Amino acid sequence: MPPVALVDCNNFYASCERVFNPKLEGKPVVVLSNNDGCVVARSNEVKALGIDMCEPWFKIEKVARSHGVVAFSSNYALYGDMSARVMGVLSQFSPHQEIYSIDECFLGLSGFESRDLTAYGQDIRRRVKQWTGIPVSIGIAPTKTLAKLANHVAKRRAGYAGVCNFGQFSTRALDALLDSIDVSEVWGVGRKISQRLESLNIKTVRELKAADTRFVRQQFSVTLERTLAELNGTACIELEEEAPNKHQIISSRSFGKAVETLQDLNEAVSSYTTRAAEKLRAQGSVAGSIGVYILTHPFKPHEPQYQPSLVVPLVKSTDDTRHLVQAALRGLKRIYKTGFKYKKAGIMLMGLEAKDHLPRTLFDDPAAEARSARLMRVMDTINGRMGQDTLQLASSGIEKTWRMQRGAKSPNHTTDWSDIPRVMA
Image 1 (tube, one colour):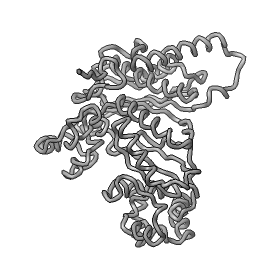
Image 2: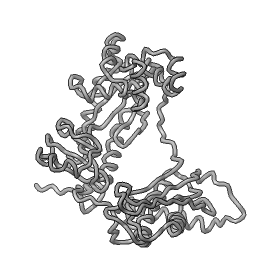
Image 3: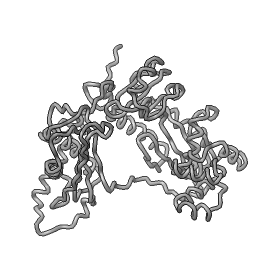
Image 4: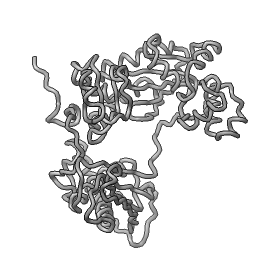
C-alpha cells in the first residue's frame, strides 16, 4: 500500500500565540474557551503541571498563576489564518492532501516510496517551522489509522525527533510498540468502545490488531471492523482531497453577560446568521430552512429556565444573508419571552442543497437573483479583504455588548491591518 503521512501541529493554539511572542517559549501557556471559561489548549509545560483539558479557569486560575501560567482568550481569526498558512506549506510536499482539522492534515505519499520518508518528514517539519513558526509532528504508515498512531508516537516519545515512520519497523518491532499503546488511542475508538474492549481483555493496540474480524463485527460494528483492517495494513479509509459539503451549518456562542432584551438577542442572532451564511456561500449551497434557539443558564438552577427552539421554513432556498436573517428574526420573535436571563443563542441552516442544482420554477426572478448574488459577492469580498464585519447588516448592531468576554485576547497579527506587528531596526 502507498504510505500516508499525518501531520499534526503541536499544541496548535498555544503555538500560534508563541509565534508572535517569542518570550513565551518555554513558559506554560493555556488558551481558554469562549468567555474565558475552560482550558482548550495547553503547552507541554502546562501538561507537566497536571492541568487537564476543559478545566474551568476560575477553579484553577490562582494555582495556575502561582506557577507562572500565561492565559490567553481564544483568538479564532489568528488560529484560522495560521492554519491556512501551515496547510499551504504542506501542500508543497504532496499533490494529495486532505485537511482533516484546523491543525491536522493527511498527505498521500504515493510515488515517494523510493525516498527516505523519515528524512522527508524531517524536511517537512523544518520547512513548516521556518516558514510559519509552528512545530509539527509527523506519523507515516500504510493506512490513515496507523498514521494516526505513528503520529501519536512521534509526538509523545522524544526518541523519534518528531517523525515516526512505521514503514521502517519489522513486524515484530511494530507489534511490540503497539503493545505499549492503550487501545483508547486508536482513531475512532472512543471512551465507551475502549471500555467494552477492555472488558473483553483487549487493552492494547496490538491486542485489537490480533482480534478476530468476525467477532469484532458481531460485537461492535462494521466501522470497527474497518479499523481492524487498517491496523493490519489494509487501507479502508480513502484520502479525501476535497472536503465534502456540510449538510447543516450551525453558528452559536455564549454571551459575555446575561441577555434579557429582544433587541440584544436580535443582534446576536443576526450576527450568527451572517457567519453561517458566509460559510453557506463558500461551499456553494443554499438553505431550505433555518432553526433558531435561545437558552438560559443551565448551571444556575435557581434562576427561571427556558430553552425554546423553532424551525422556520423558507419560501425559496437561498444563500442571501438578508433573507436568512429575516427568517431567523421572525423565529426568534415567536419564541422570545420576557423575564428570563439568556446565556446563549444559536442558529442552524438546514435543508442544504447545491446552488447550481437548484430546480427552477415559474416564479423565479432571475434579475433579483443576479442582484442578490452580486451583493453577497461584494460583502464577502470586502469582509475577506478588510476584516470580519467591515460590511454588515444594521440588525447585527454596533456596540454588541452581548459579545463573549475575551479579556486576554492577543492581537489579530495576520488578519487586521491595525494589529500587524511592527519591527524596529
